[in-house]
Length: 428
Image (cartoon, rainbow, N blue to C red; front, side, top):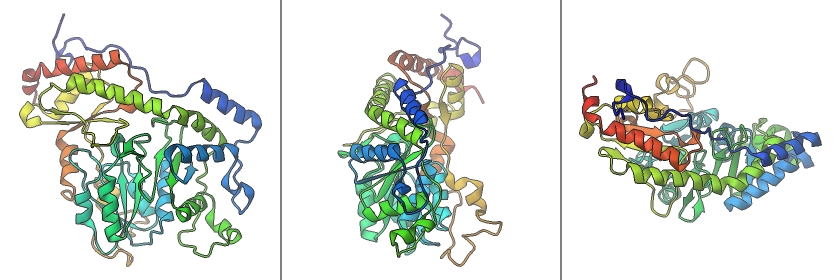
């Protein structure tokens, strides 16, 4: 058998395409079919009316989500970006307020803050979990800080005990962006449910897949009401509801349809199965890759579980003597799809580097509502930046529906690459 690296002309370890992650089954098809045949694809009315809260499938899905996640309120939205915008508005953020957010997240976490003319302030990530660092949150609090957005990146909850303690001491609100971690547990509770408001994505490559969509969760009655208003044309509804506090009562059409909610109902029943399957795959990776030198496997906090949207790893490139990019090219050549380098540092995007958002003159940073000079220069988040530039390597579990044989084949590719490190060291 030819053991030469595929990168150097040998045969690839993996010559097959792995099954694409697709949790849609006959139950979802039937659920969607029934909605289509009913003729009621949406039943929202943007006025104070019995249908202000949507149709039967919207209400059923929300009630089931509230029960499943153990919260008082669940509110569906047409995307998780919409959910984040609604969450920031519902907690009463004012123009110029500062909201602390990690740089390792999808850009919507930060732009949802900007949406309300508030100021994103980036705190570094924890070196083990990749979630926002409680110590860096403390270091970034100013008199203008009003909230923290904790992102449960890759499938694991942030350290919510520490974050909620910080928030309590400084009188801050907390949002959990749990887009990638539905079903993960933190000390006996579901990730996303320990903040003032949290929630999950229903995007096509997330654990629950309805195409697009999101679910907001909260135990706060007032926040829930404001989420519902922002979702559905608040300014047209507040008078009929008798609302007197019009703070952020600028409404949108963030409504999720009946078809998506019908599919979500069936998907929610399978969430435990989806997460358990990812965890079994990760356990097998842990067993097969743990002996490889210079490779740090995912760290899971005590009393927590991981939903493994991504299987995150760190490389000790100095000890290995091989560049990260070379290792990744070698793995990709062996047929490992879904392996990649780095993770987006949101603060390095052009919007933040140039401070251009609304219009072309730097609003809101150059306006009177911004209380101080905000720095987004490289160096403000050294852990996130080093990991992105040098040492982080992730495997996108969300892309595939892997069985044990698939995992063993991927592990075989890793072992082959690691057995040829001396050859890779010679690649410039």
